[in-house]
Length: 277
Image 1 (spheres, rainbow, N blue to C red):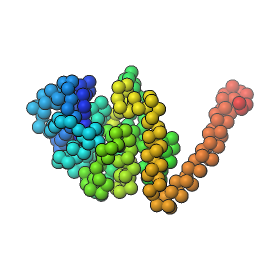
Image 2: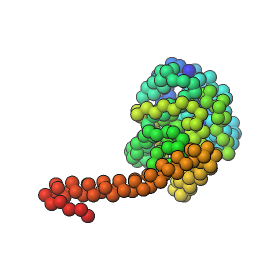
Image 3: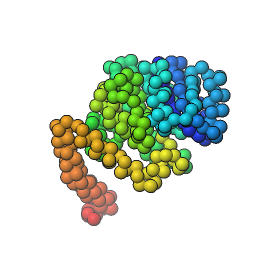
């Protein structure tokens, strides 16, 4: 079984579409656990309405200590051996849950399965495709600009037993909880990347991450977290990270220069005049 966990607080704008997105997966071996933090905007009424009609929906509504705490509550009552997290304002591509169940049967336990994710803006447009190809710990430690992390939990799934090895989500982490989890996870599990789009992430006004990014805090939180974990790695890993970072800094910049000259050369050729600017 696969368990989809949705933490929510005052999510009236998206809660119904979130519930319907899971229903429309048409996965007979799935449950949807919704952990509400005591909403007062009508969210609970919508959850209750659908839960009365669909047996795969289970829910709880009570005050919590933030998103990580809500996610941990969901994990503790999950019946599935595979977990996925769907934030209330995000959504899956079609038939993702059935695909994940089949893939998980062929992989060692615990495994982390990672796909691609579309990022959407307030205008309802896709403005970025997240393809986290390199997921080794030394690769991820190089930073987002070199090797991007999975941008949203809608694009990855994992065996519940992984938490027996790395613990639950850190309740004190309110902004980088997913990055913190992934750093710990890739060091303790079998990681499989699939070049397929599984998730959709709305990066829109009013959300916690959007507001944090607007204030210029998101990037610094990310860098600080990477630095903390890098110091804990074995010295061999730290040296490898430094070597990779140096290589990218020196050769990456040179490659950009070469490509720029090459593109300008093509431009000149098309105009029947070869020149560089």
